[in-house]
Image (cartoon, rainbow, N blue to C red; front, side, top):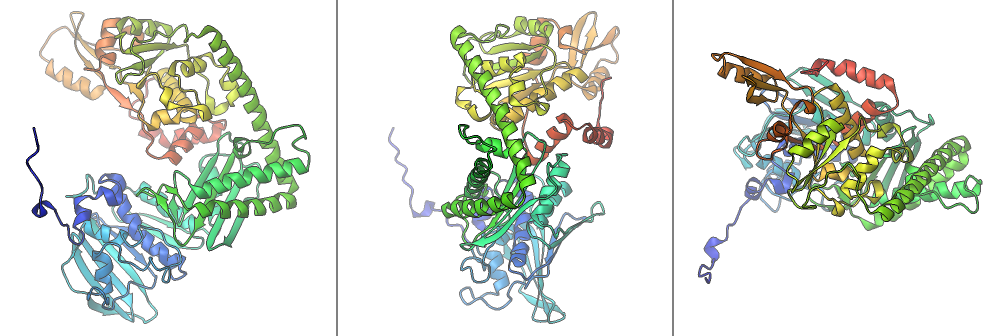
Length: 638
């Protein structure tokens, strides 16, 4: 049927001022959830940080009030108050009500800046039910109020101050009509503020939460060197050398700052920033760094015969194993990929960082031969482990090519690679047998795991491949692992961990999650890893289950419903093997009834640190973590 409806001029919606922001807030701040809410604070903070980058501001205070408002105060130059020649309004009102109005476009007021380049403060105004701007400038204190992006008062003088006292104060209350939550998290904000203080050496950032009377002051004269020390301390990494390698240079209008320290860890921990923005996905500055460090260490190793003439060069993975590094670049016109600015795209930055880091690191290695030897020894040990792992992979691959068989204990499903296909990783042969009997064989595969798999946090890749259980999972999933991981080859849409509801089951689940996080992280990031929630209790009457309960709360409700009935007993399930096939299907495997928890990574750094503390070599930090957090455990099954 032909479409006879044609749209005309009357159908074109014209959004004025800040209306586009309120109409599509996600385009400007990423989401209307917790992440977007906290982004408002970051945008206001970025303006103050820009003042610091310009050498004007050295103190920023952020206050959360009991009414949920946030106030950001700095001692920068203050937003200009004069009438703007183009808008006919005060400059304060102009930058707060017009998108892309700011002092960051011509590179005269600010050589470098973060934020959304003039968008940020107006976006915060648009998404706040009330915003109050106060400016100290010219010996006077000015104030103007806004409501949902529109001025509700004129800019007026409300007091006087010393002529040299300048600064800006922005107080805002997020609009609950826009956001899913308007509750700010102290922990989320404090992490960001600490990060900003590390990246801007010498600045003082004061954080006050009047809801809980918490106060923090972030001030680091060591800058990103202090940042590297903080990361290693937080992750409980043991540095292999005390001195932190530090590079600080301005080249081709780009300020390059790099701090490096090697540790006893097997992991690479590198954080990258561009104009104070955390580029979580890296970019050209990270590429330049990686190229430089690989070349400089190989050149030094060749020159001093650490790497023999007939040996291959060390790989990038070899030279970065155990490294903790922070890379911070500041440049006039950063080009970011995506609205959230997760990746730096300036092509020229790669060459500038590469040449700078290569020259400075090469000089450092020459001047510090003891540290150079430590780094080369670490990299060579990493290469030996990788070579052993490669040989193990080749043997395993050759064997698979001969047999062309999946793990013998895998009960595969009939429809591989479909949206409904899933594999259950089941603790023990007994529960595995029950699961095989109870499953839907069309869509559900079962892989029983014998005992506890290897803790990969304490082992290198070669040792990991000695584990038959890990090799069975790698083969069954079909994706490979580590650098060779390819999610396109994934044989199941869901990978479901199904363990007993006791301490041993929780430990097995944690070991599996450690493996996935370290060697198959895209499976988690793209939503393929789940944890099955088997019921803890069954309400039983005359040997017949009336209801299954996943926790004590559900049990209380069930008992209350059946309180007037006789012969009602509580059955406690401590293992999957205690259920028959029909019960296991009904409670834990049937997609219509079951309860699955999807595994997510909300904060990579925190997750990485937690795995290192809980699963790593060092016992002391694990004991400390347990002591500090035992009070938060709701239930411990002894």
